[in-house]
View 1 (cartoon, rainbow, N blue to C red):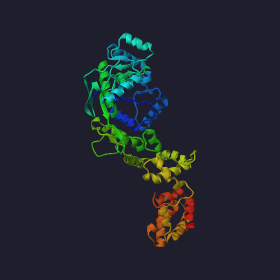
View 2 (view 1 turned 90 degrees about the vertical axis):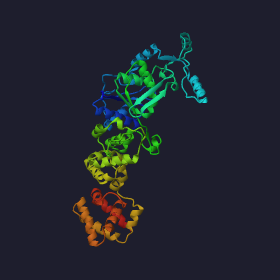
View 3 (view 1 turned 135 degrees about the vertical axis):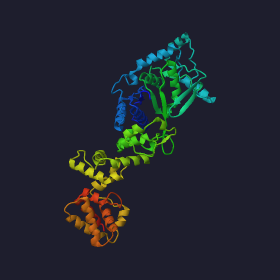
View 4 (view 1 turned 180 degrees about the vertical axis):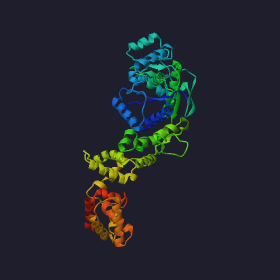
Length: 484
């Protein structure tokens, strides 16, 4: 394959969207697989909405995901600058070339005139487009319009009666008729280039070999191909990856769950799990394997196995993948992720001592297999950090059984006498109660669990009791006995 140079070019108008993260990931995987380069280019020509804060947030999200780039605004590179607002002089040179060759012209139409034209076309059942009112203005007509104070935009002169075919690596050949496009704006009246123009200049100047982006950009591609042809620039390979839909098959939105990478980070998802999940949105590996580390993804990824059909963002599958990674992750790292959630819920102080950190690690180890993301730690926190527990209806029913007072009293007696609390010792203690009282294990374990945790389901008792400590467990048992 030719030298691979790809780019991820976000608009810094908000956090990194899940769809953008997947595009960045696919570009990264292709670049790394073939020893190529990934360019980070900031498309900040939306002056009102763009911000450096959003730019920094996007870069932070990419780094968190493990997606690194070779050239960009923070790293420089041979084709700097990498922010579009810093490349205006470059765009001007290409605009002048188009104007000189007759491929572009000044348009003085007002918004009101354009809207009236649009409404007229729609009323006739025609596709709304610019009909070329200013295509052939004389110098005198242009002078008069400028005297009136009209500031022109620059439009691209779309050739009539032609077919533009996009040779797409995912979708095959897709054709568009130029008569349905209309002369489009390439430079706004304030001198800022539009997306379709700037992206062509940048991709050509930066020697981009492959453009991997979302399907929604496919309709822009014929406009861009016309500009490439008019300027005599080499055309990159295009690959338009499918839309991401919610489980209801509608375009992904907030009602389907979190839509930005930072939200998943804040919820306590692991970056390697999110990367694994995103890779499977529209790309299918050759076998049945579903768990992939980054190195495996780089080795296996190919555009040939990227599907045309929309990808479905299945939260259940993401939770399953993240749960798998949580179970494989050392408790020390998970505890670090859990602490902010426990602090926000008031279970852990701002200043975390070594003792507190050790307890959080024990709690995480006890509930690790029940978690699908780390913010769920707060659902288990009262069990380990509260002085009292609330008895739920199922537990209350268990505590009403005939043998319970004898079980809890003997448990209290043995716990008080125990020299030290550790999992194996707690297991032996509970087993000794079943032997002494000559009753089944359920008749012992369930009442103790109900009294100590307020529930009949959850982490293992032999893990819970050493974490709680003798005093807290005795207090809970005494509270349960006092209510009988």
